[in-house]
Image (cartoon, rainbow, N blue to C red; front, side, top):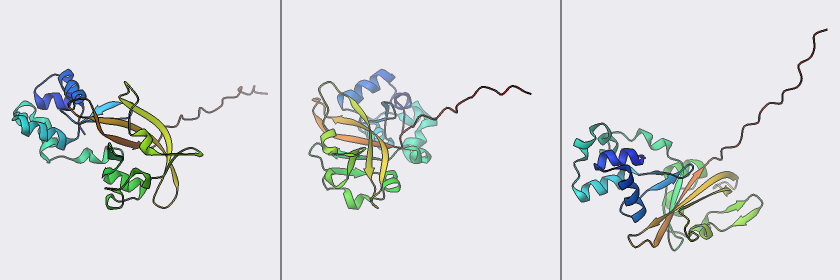
Length: 195
């Protein structure tokens, strides 16, 4: 996955232009972590090809990430899946297979209801999360998602929405990360006085 800065170097435009293209739907992106925008290499490659941008000359050091030479950072992408606006799963990532045990063939093309989720103790329908509230660009929640073997896995879910050029929601991307739990600070007692 590429940052907006890396994408701007490859496209020969400013970072703000890349963000504008993302917001207008010209450049697909996903939100990771606390809402940072990332671009998949294949999506950036499509924009480069469609517009005839000489990316290999603009940023030769990054060109390998786009042209397929270096995909070593793929393992760092958190598990994710993509829904169309109707709630049908259209993509299930390999990283999600490793964490949840579901293969793409089990879920792709089917309704999101195949995937069980809950706010700890309370069932939730993931399709309810697939449409944004007015003015919302992304949403992060702490949920539990059932893996294929029936175990509930704590998951930090970040949902971002895919818009078309008119601003209508065409789908959503669910990033699934292990929650960052606050580390316990060891309690410090009073030091004992020497006798």
